[in-house]
Length: 304
Ligand SMILES: [Zn+2]
Ligand SMILES: [Zn+2]
View (tube, rainbow, N blue to C red):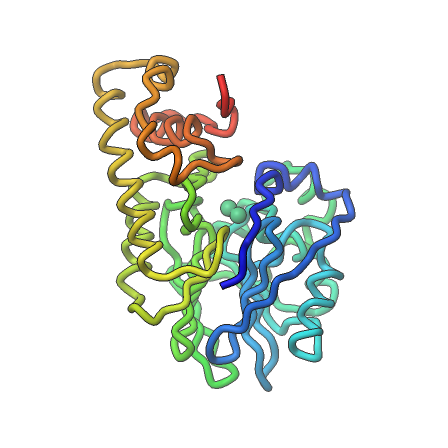
């Protein structure tokens, strides 16, 4: 597997700020089984592509303003650059960014119902710039199946996990699973409490994904390298363990500054911290969730 370099500055929180900036993306293209291709840039969410005679299905489409570059990368793989379908795993700006580009080119954009609602109601600048372009015209509830290119692709909604509109995408015959941001492979997860995400739901989603896989499954993480079911399990176990550390501190009445000062996840720091969800932000995520507070972990500084 190729080395994957994380450019951690470019995730959902900063997507809007970057919307206006032209950004040179370097696509790392990894052919998986059964006509499925993973495209990574080290910036924003990983893309999945199904290639075949019935047309292209693209899972997620990066940051705003990246449409022409994605189109060119797809064309280099498939000989055509406009997907028949674009499926968004959730509504963050690093996964829906090129929707307007592909909308204008005639792609059909499909998402969970809640993504359409969030885009309709969002006051984020990059969405307001072209709300119609971001909106899906096809939405689903529990699941949506695509039958194309000899493949059955199942988009499966997992409730209240990273957001309230997540889907994971299973390419059945290829045995490839795109996890969206249910999997930050090897890193503390971003759980967007303000978009309906919950720690319980996130763990349940990881468990549901794990059950769908076997040792052979090629797992595309939302962020991070090409992964396996072991990475799904490792993430679930880490979140269960860290929640079991933080929850009693919340129940004991400790304030967030007190919990942060105790550095309760020190043992997890070296293996899991990264620039976007550093250890204090993981502590804050678990704290807010356990306390039932609608807090924003991204507001917590990574160093004191
Ligand atoms: Zn993401
Ligand atoms: Zn996300």
